[in-house]
Image (cartoon, rainbow, N blue to C red):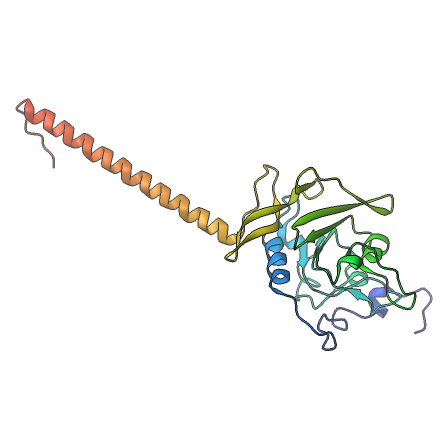
Length: 262
């Protein structure tokens, strides 16, 4: 490929999202249920109050193409979020992949769900074969410079958070299984509860009042409970009013006065 003078934009000369989809028939295996449900819960509860919903893109198990020098190299985070970009590709299409030289914005946070087969790579403990693409840790830390990298052990339910500090990831010492991210005005923590009819610890977002951000199903359930409580309060109020009127009628009749109840 010959370069022009002046050089053309990478957006013009390098592969686009349509050329770099996530589907790869040569890559066997599908995510297990936890890898399907946990990212969905992160999606449902990720609502940073300082960003409009149409300027937030979240994805799971989607190819993330990160290096314009090697446009076919990608990583596939279990979950990641990008801030300040349209939810849709060029304001119109659902994304087939996330191509950083097309989008112009890097992920703000990446979450990897630890499992025995990926633990060493997720934690940057593997030696790189110079003939192979870099590992996840190197890509997130040194190439994409993702500000926050989160690792969640799905078996021990342990949360580990790494923050970019001076060009390297530094692990944050957590006194409890929660971590507040001021740039998002949200925190990430381990919640013990029932999601999709499964009771176990889950990773989810919480707000500035330390309350867990509700899913749409939880919001609907909360609204229904509120309406039920309001209806019960109204029923009780009407019953008290009926009893008050009956007492008043009885008092009037005891005085020889027949009330006009019409």
